[in-house]
Length: 166
View (tube, rainbow, N blue to C red):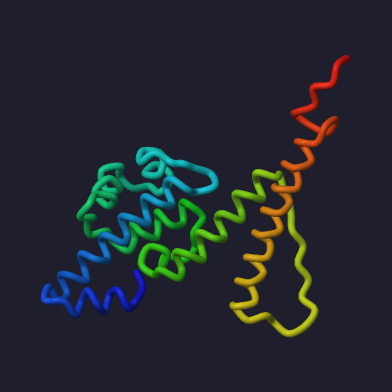
C-alpha cells in the first residue's frame, strides 16, 4: 500500500479505521505473497513462524481476510527471517515491487547456479534509477539465456529431443 492508498483510505468516511483496515489487508496480501513466492520457499506458516521466532497463530491471523494488528517487532522479525531488510515491504507498494523483482532475479540466478556477479563502477555513484534499470537488464538477460538454452536443447543432436538411432 502506498501513501496515496493510505490517504484515500484515511479520507473515507471510515477515517483512520479505514486506513488501518487497508494497511492490515495490504500486510496480509504481501505476507501471503512472499511466503509463497520466496526463492527459498514456499514456506508453510509453521516454518516461517519458526524462522521468525513468532507464533504460527500470529502469522495465520496476519494473513486472514481482516488481518491483525502486528507489532513493528513482528514485522521486522518476519522480514529479516526472509532476508528482506526493508520492512516497508509490507506497507509500501514501490518497495514491495522492488523487493519482489530482486527476489525473482535471485531465484533465476539460483536456478542457473550463478554463484557470483561482479559489478564495477566506472564513474560517480549511480542513482537508484540506474540500479533499478540494471536489475531489469540482468533479469532480461537471464530470461534470454533461458530461452536460448531451451532452443538449443530442442535442436537435433543437442539435447533432450535427440532420438537418433544407435
